Image 1 (cartoon, helix red, strand yellow):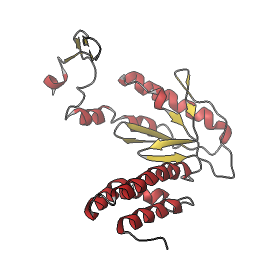
Image 2 (image 1 turned 60 degrees about the vertical axis):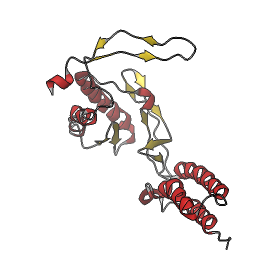
Image 3 (image 1 turned 90 degrees about the vertical axis):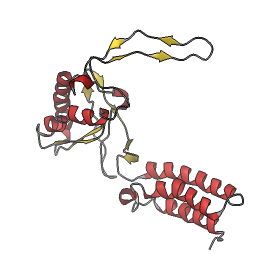
Image 4 (image 1 turned 120 degrees about the vertical axis):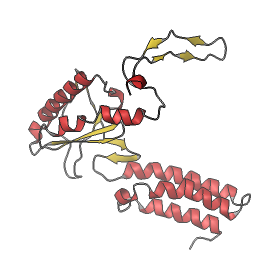
Length: 228
């Protein structure tokens, strides 16, 4: 393991189609592992293994969840007026972990979203990390799902509608050119895979009916069945 992690060097290659390529000087890798390596993902998980404990043990009001390099912190607080102060205190502790372990937080991919009911309004608050303001958003992507602040799933459904309309158009265009088995393969790759992912979360929302209508349209095109 020591031989794998030590005495590694890297350089940067810039390819230019209109002129010659440019190469930087070789520099010793002082932190991290080689990208694309088999052990890289495992070593990364070992590297951040103590991050959830350092956050979750701070209070009962926060919980950190990890999936590979996707990190999410869920905050709850019974008092809206103290909510902002509690979150900023937690971020101070998070900053301490980052300072000790030397990774960096990508502020362009770091957002704050409040989950509220349709009858309540979000609390106006400012969350800071190293004097940088964390952006407040109304919806965000989470492991392939688009979450919105009221968990209505409308944004997620709207994205799927566009994809499924395009898939139906392609199926209609290919129908006269390809056999049924090929259309079936395309359906599972471009329609069924989109609908089945995360359906246990969004499948019962008020907007899901449009998705299932598009699914039926794709199947009717494949089997040459008319509208009822």
